[in-house]
Image (tube, rainbow, N blue to C red; front, side):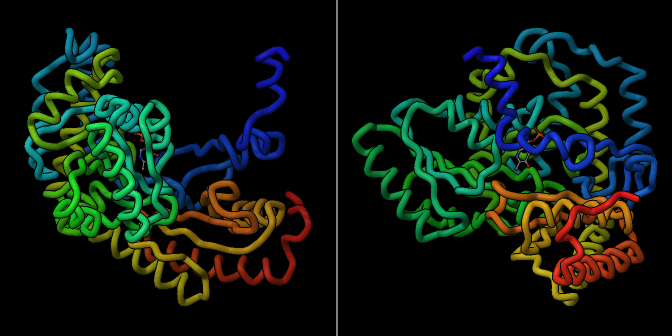
Length: 412
Ligand SMILES: Cc1ncc(COP(=O)(O)O)c(C=O)c1O
């Protein structure tokens, strides 16, 4: 069969839904100012789908810094990869500030979180090394592992007994291969909102020799007393060898960073292919990131507000009888039972009748028969918005039970 025809016919596990989902459930267009009230199909919606945790995306100081960075430098500057012609004082200064923020010796800026993680994993391993990782790891970790030609052992999500079992298997192999062990987990799991057991995993360092890499995309700026992330929150930051986070969420920008001991970061600077062979982060981004970091550090009230909204939302949903699983972070999943057809009718009802926009997650991300709605509270949501949302979720839960979504939702 012709390769392109084959791919065009089979759109893959996500694309197979495109014929009814495209433009509505997938690739929707949220328009207007970034925030909790945006326009979808021309109508204003209350948005619970943006990882704009601290509300920085559209705040005046950030918008001003972004404008100033673009005005002073333009998008082109600097030209080339950091290693060749793309290094600047502002890139290095941001690395210094990030190191101090997450309490690590050194930091390397990365162009994207996804590519960065892939490349970190790739650069650290050879075929003698073994990886032990959580079964619910983000795609960037899984895809990084696809580049690894040595062994990997997955442990059941957050199951410490199984983790040790896999660690023992890894140790046996590396004793023969003379390789090392890399352990990877997330700080905050972005779908369910629970946190990796960083403290418990770290404790195994007393018994086993491994390097510990944590993806804290959803934890940075959000978790911990100073916002330094899930390592700080659990008192495990010192035991994390490589702390990775992206700027795509609480920082409301793009790019990522990895922090650790000086020698490891120096190694990454000379071995991460995603950075050596790619243009540096553009200056307006770096300029804007300085401002974002200083807001995250100096305005703890943003984090307090985020947590206040988070607690109100999660408490209210629970009291209304909704199942929000075991989240420990602002990520708020709501689990319901139903078919894919019921799920899509329900979300149409939420969006069209109640003007609430949240993300829908279905099989294969969650088991068949589970409908997961994911809400992301932010520092700019209001108490009234939380209360309205809880009432509406109560109503849709009852409507689901009463059979309202058994038939396709008719758009009026
Ligand atoms: C856990 C995790 N790691 C990495 C990434 C990728 O980050 P970026 O969007 O900066 O490429 C994401 C983003 O969805 C994420 O949730």
